[in-house]
Length: 371
Image (cartoon, rainbow, N blue to C red; front, side):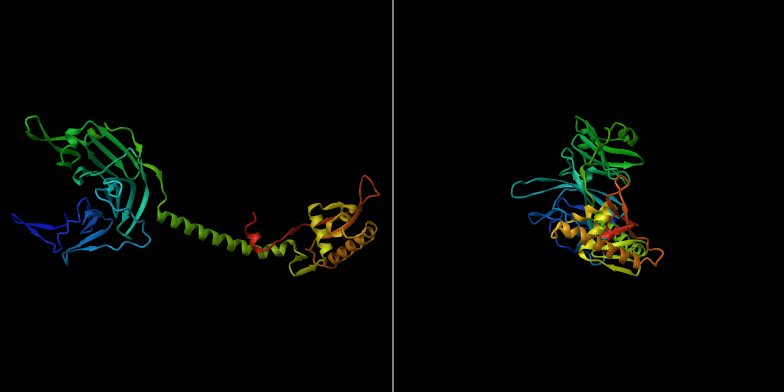
């Protein structure tokens, strides 16, 4: 194969000027939009994964440049194909390596004529083997289904559902290459014991109703490269929108929420600087809004002081913190204050309370990704 001929009257006229390289053994010849394409094949002692197209003007075979982002299929020959619109499905095939003269491939992929890309769909089940199958043993039923004949088995593959069914014991149909479907009827050439040929036929509906139940075509379904890119693109768009919305809400959040930022209390344009000791007191009161005064004495920040000094010093620190907050309370929305009180069960125990809604703010990044 590889040469292109036309028929004139009772003669075959060769149309192409390409060399007879014999590089088309086991290739897939596909007609698409008034062009002939050849996929894969064997020639010059090796299998190929090239795609070539016949140019009717130059009468030459030219190599098709595959998109750089395309899946790279293994070299092969005798792959099975099914054409659907701008896509061609390729199923299995055979190649050779140092260890095996016939290495059977278990893959299902597509080639898209519109963007010149291969995409892997998945891996075939091990019991599903179409190798060294003559292209004449393939019958295209419709956009989604094809019949494949091999020995005494006929396979019906649905490329839309990725399922297959089979029918055994039909060697009288499968043994010969001469098969054709015409008006929902399969015609085939049969031979009897006296070596007499006879054209027989069977309605497709009668044939198909005897097939097995459907089985999964693939061991594991893969997400195609194109689908992965689309998912990644959608994820990036969603992330961008999410970050944009959260950043927009951050400004609003800072205007309605009193925040504790490191050693500062902030609200709108209000900024209250805190000492290390004041900051630790606020952190503790945010966890336990009403606390006994002696609990404040035990904070780590006061460990370096003596017990007697702490009892004098800490109330002064709290008074100063209370004064700082009260000085900013002119804003009616700034509802934060520190109050002293006594334990309701034991009036001798002094308590300190933090009243108001205040939240820890650790920067815009943690705000965005904190749910």
